[in-house]
Length: 181
Image: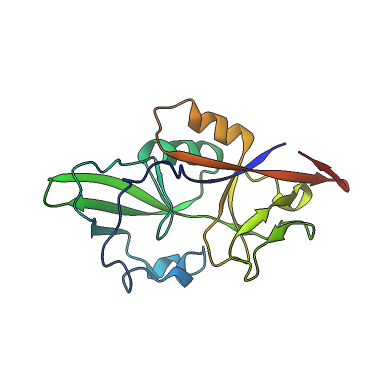
């Protein structure tokens, strides 16, 4: 089984950039135990840009998914908690509804994974398959960055839909002591 880190395609430079979010969403509350501290619906202004592309995933400053991606997540993991986030570009009168998924955190990276010095970037990720609990979508535990990891079947289902701007980083999988690439 293959797994991928889900994020934005870095070639999309005109993704929605959220203004003044700090203090409204506490990054420490992005877990299933503290999610109740985050409002169920929020409106955020984005930097004005007539060329903004509302990608299907926005991963900065926190993960947001489009309604289409949310539908796929729900097909595979129906108990995900979401917070509705409305993004508004007042100048160009554009708005888009996104969902902030609060995913279960799983500590499943193999000790042979490689990181940068402060462990904020995964250089080479190796998933211990047995530790994934056969989840289709989850968050990697133990990182400041919110890494969303999707199983191959979920990722394929997303890509079959009308999505744009999704970036994927394949992870290696360790099963029974053997690494699969």
